[in-house]
Length: 313
Image: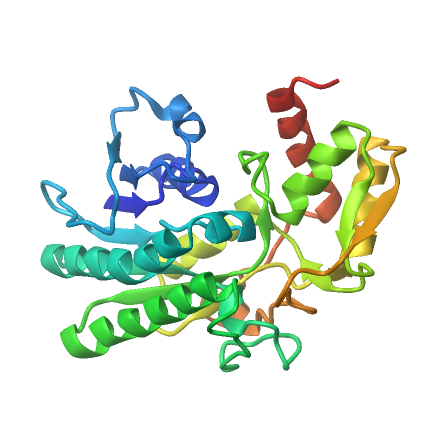
């Protein structure tokens, strides 16, 4: 297949490039580098089946030649990013999705949208299954991301129903691994950075809020299976093992040997209290997919990647 990945220089996008190239496909990565980095794809320079295009997908997308699939992963994805770039976040979810869908239709290509667990907002249902419509504050500071993704899902389904486009929607839950931006602002990079510098880990609230953490290779496996599946409606991809942020902080300190301890700060506005995917649908429609990398194994690999990039022992 010849595949376009928007956001291809990002954390998840670059790992998808690696996987799809390893599977024998031809890959075009497109990114405006607002939050992505060419460092993530530098190792692919000169690869005969890889091309990088520096482009903002909220503008008209031109790709010469045929395409078999368009994977739309372009978007700021951390609270720090979408608070710094609120309008860009809304534009890439709305205009960028529209442009990417138009390209897929023109090329008769399959389209896969990277959506998010944030479409569930601060959920009133636990764990979150795909038939839950969510509890989102549309005018809160996080609404620019949540509503952009909800709109993107609606537009994707409209193209499927109106034009018969082959579409797929993945709702991604917390994912971590090598190549996460060091200043990403999310809990995994924050904690690892602080721990490797001997600092206390910053926990917001009392740390009782829960998250579930999926290692990047498990997520990519789920996305690839979804791309090749026949499932049109959204599918959760994430790790259902739930833990409190306080437990997670303690695990990071233990694995890094950090003696800095933990400090507590006020909880940000609209920060979800619970986040855990119901992955029964993924197991059913994606050939029994489920995460296989343990938290300790994944964190060790991620910590080593951060050590190397930060130059700390």
